[in-house]
Image (cartoon, rainbow over all chains, first blue to last red; front, side):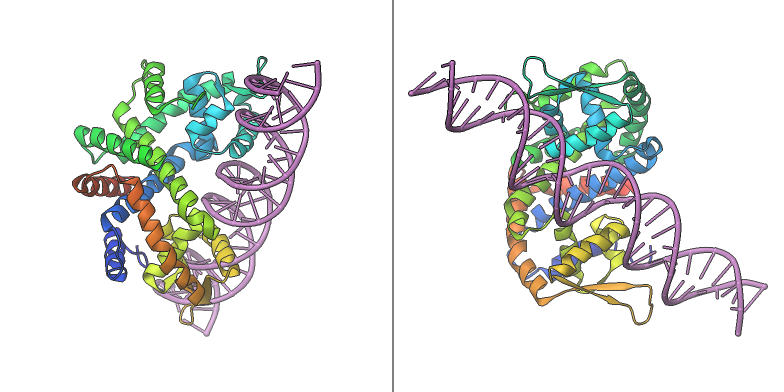
Length: 163
Length: 163
DNA sequence: CGTAGATAGTTCGGACCCGAACGATCTCAA
DNA sequence: TTGAGATCGTTCGGGTCCGAACTATCTACG
């Protein structure tokens, strides 16, 4: 598209512009492309799958985590969704308002809140997730099966190193 | 940490929970780990490098794009930073308020706005970017040089497929 | 038994995120 | 020359994002 730089142009400009500095260009390429790929994939999912249900990315992830574990505590959901407890509070308020989840105070430990999907929420995930998975397949369609396994493993190790 | 599931536990639960559905688990593993890795890496950078300059992730990326190209139009910056023009407007307002960038209306085309770093902004990037790059090295420290090259290439192809 | 310290979730303020709508500007065809 | 259509950036409303502060609850030690 006119006015925009291709990925190659950008990486070329970076190499030229920062040549004098003592930098690790390989590390830079990995992380820059990690964020680009995550961003592009997320935008694709939001555009093709989530928009029609008026779900944000994080709202979907939170629903997914609660769906996967059937009953989950908010501190667990926040951790697995990769958001703070403050953020999760707000997202759950939105999802609860739309009737997709229910929050319950723990009986044994009054500090804890557990979250369950409502019947409406379960129907939504059962319908939405196969479409989401189709979009996931779309973004990895240029990779062979072996490349996908290698990529998943490499990404796990990046996550571990960053935590 | 107590109460939190490990990555292995989560992936195991996913396999168990969704076994009956006709899903592509390899694609799922790639995208799930893509978002986890990006999120973990971003949190690491924000904690270790950006927090002390009171910069958000996106504010830093916007500064970086404008720094790399020396003079850039807002539509280009938005595209390369992966945010909408609406979002960029707000981020630039913040950065301009802090004295890091300057906006200028195009003389030839009154629709366009170009962005340049101020002297203060340039000093900040010159100081900050080597630290940022060190954090980048940290998150890929468990990968060999070859693995980094392969990873960067795989991620580029995911970005292309998603766009 | 009482209190200090820790943990959990919520609220607040400020920053980001985006689609839609708007005003301003540009281009091109009639 | 004019007007329709396109493009650009900003504003708005609603949602997200998080650290800090707060309230509530739990645990362990003296």
